[in-house]
Structures are given as structure tokens and as C-alpha cells.
Length: 151
Image 1 (cartoon, one colour):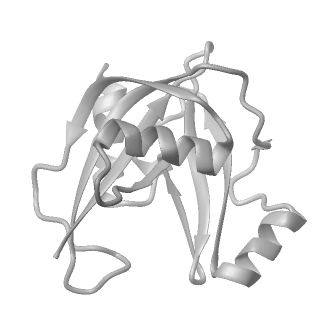
Image 2 (tube, one colour):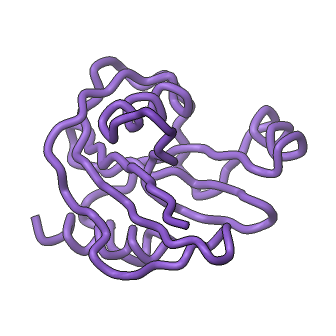
């Protein structure tokens, strides 16, 4: 089985890069915002939906940045292969979602979400001078982080 994931790279006016800190089934991950492609959905529409659902943020999907070009086993579904597609995105409005300064700084609402669903997330920006593959957890995200550093 192949799972398609779509992620957005959002830089603010200072060049900082948005990441999502997630607590999923007892493990911590830092990744780019985005998620799974649903049946009947295009990749750009998926990314717009994910930003709206996760951050209540309208975005414009810009240029394609990267699509996985190597085999990657899913960290969450044994036997599944992951293919991830990354786009640059631009916020079309001010960010309303709470932004954190510290990784995995979940508030009470987010911790209740974890208790109910087994997963939660929060968001923060990382300064571009501090951003590297070590800032993200997942193997494909690390490749993308290196590409971003080169640009």
C-alpha cells in the first residue's frame, strides 16, 4: 500500500520556517505542516485543507519543491510505503493558531486532544539560520530541510 502525504513549507517575512511539533501515540515528532491525501482530492487542495484544519489558516499553494524519490517505509503503518509531496506555501491571512517558542509546548486544550485521540500538535517558527535537517524528525523531511538550506 502507498500512502500519499502533502506538506507545505511556509516562511514568514523574516525567513523563519514553520514546523509542527506533534505528539502521536507516545512519540514526539517535529515535521512540516500537512497531511494525508484523501480520495478524490488533488495535492494542492489537500494542502489547503490541511492548513485550514490544523491552523485555521488560508494559504496559497505556490511552487512544487520536492517529491520523494526513494523508498520510505511508513513509521505508523507497517507494510506501507510513504510518498510525500512538498510545496512552498504563502499565508493569505495572519496566523491565528497559537505559536510556541519551545518545542512540544502543548497547552491544556492540546493535551486534552491527546487524551481523546492519541495525537496532538502545536506550531512554531525556526529561524532560517538555525534550521537544518536536525530540526525535523522524519527521513523525508530531513531531505527537504537540506534542500531548503541550499536555496
